[in-house]
View 1 (spheres, rainbow, N blue to C red):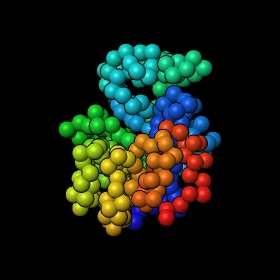
View 2 (tube, rainbow, N blue to C red; view 1 turned 60 degrees about the vertical axis):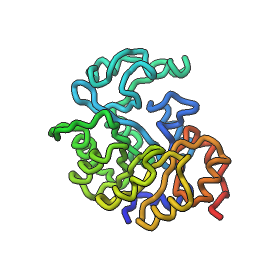
View 3 (spheres, rainbow, N blue to C red; view 1 turned 120 degrees about the vertical axis):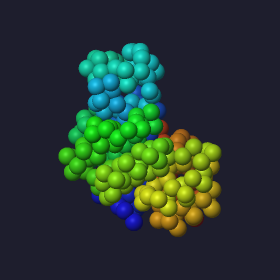
View 4 (cartoon, rainbow, N blue to C red; view 1 turned 45 degrees about the horizontal axis):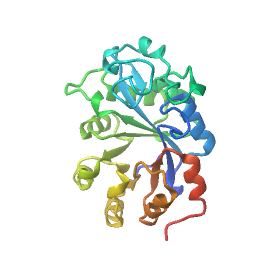
Length: 259
């Protein structure tokens, strides 16, 4: 079974800060990630996609509209244009001046301080494999930073994970699935060595968790913001949870263990 530098399975459950400390800070920004680290989260999760000039930026949506003061498609906008945008004021005026970070910036700042889940966006997938494709760029960055044992690479798109595995079979991979795809994990696991299955929380049953564990795959449901819901999931023996409020989860689950 693959392990990350910090054997995260020893944390039970693993608290994964979804886009950082998303409930109190603008998502996918350095302030959000720093807040998650201060709160004691075990891992931060972020989203990465490509700009028009093929630079890796950390942002969830395919457009700039919701989380910046800019407009338009990210894949039609150069990095220099994105860097001048305000990515904080939409959330609260206190965060005016926050920037859309590059993946390199986040890994350089946080990579030695906390585990990182890099979700490669489905929209960044390209049918043809290019030397500067997002999978190649992510793997190259991980290699250059020598932080492969601190990174979990995930995606909803299986083809992306296949490419990452082909580039580096030692990296830890996580398959994200939506409600309708509950059983797809077992078909996919026959083809690739997975570290984790990251399903919608609502579809998780103890039977699914046990079946997944028998294949040495961890279960990290998303996105859980209720302590009572988190406790139900822990009792189903999940290994960790994605949450917008890592402080709440850490406090609410302190001392709570699987029964």
